[in-house]
Image (cartoon, rainbow, N blue to C red; front, top):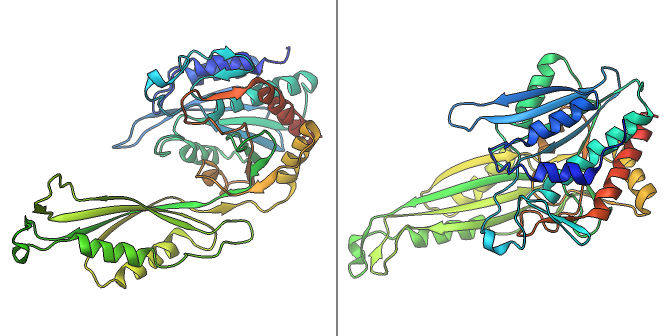
Amino acid sequence: MAALDPIALTQALIRCPSVTPADAGALGVLAETLTALGFVCHPLRFEEAGTAPIDNLYARFGTGSPHFCFAGHTDVVPPGDLSGWSVDPFAADIKGERLFGRGAADMKGGIAAFVAAVSAFLADNPAFGGSISLLITGDEEGPAINGTKKMLEWLAARGETIDACVVGEPTNPRSLGEMMKIGRRGSLSGTITVQGVQGHVAYPHLADNPIPKMVKLLTALGSGALDDGTAHFQPSNLEVTTVDTGNPTSNLIPGSVTASFNVRFNDSFSGATLEALVRQRLDSAGVPYELKISISGESFFTPPGPLSALVAGAVETVLGVTPELSTTGGTSDARFIRAYCPVVEFGLVGQSMHKVDENLRLADLAALTQIYRVMLDRYFA
């Protein structure tokens, strides 16, 4: 079978408006393509009370060892105001040397590049002894409850193990080949509530304004750096994101105030130790408060080794550049995979992801396909 065209497959995927939690046929396009290549495909739908059901896909070629997995997602964020786009966000138009559409960079282009690379690899190595799989979720841009995490649990229950995984997220800030991710910071979100007594501003003795108390709490929370960074991580960072009383008037003392914050934390902390520090700082203000904490992911790190060397070597062979080993940016589903096998991330340029007129360079798509092919050749050599 001839190698697949990554451009055509990217376009077919973009033309499925798979805004989380909708699949809109994207996984069907992928399953049909992979089945034709000889993969055994397992459509997986997961749901639990209070959450939207999510469609996912696990596809595997071969049953032998070693087992190389490519992970990613077909769901995308909404396009937003369509009047800001110069093209239909789901038409997958090509203008000049770029392909436009929601999900082009994040990350339907990366998926198409890998599938195209696999098609070329299998054409040249029809009887190789290992296994190649794709772990594709429809719940990465959403709450990530019914996606990769549950797929990995399903695999483990079947007795399937993965030896190495590459996640095709758009890891490069400006140009292809400059950066790969060997870890990610954790994410802790918190909401602080302070109660007061509502009243007229002209009669403050009959009220209790909670806002000055919240100011004390936020001052204590932001008192000094959380840490100085570690060998592979930048310093942990706390940002206050909202302060709200729900009060639209200027002559009313509010009855309560809430503030939200987020901490992106490095491997100096676990979620539990960071929460303890947050509570310690808030307690030091001497103000009664309520605190709700949620942790969407712990920090994780894959030490430089064979997998990162494999990816870096393929990039150097194709592009002649050495990618930086980075842990910057937000969270990804690699946070779940790291508990099962070594995992690194490498994909397209992310400069336009989640933006109006999201796009990819056609030359980058071709080069990424080559990089993934070199990775497969060397992994199974």
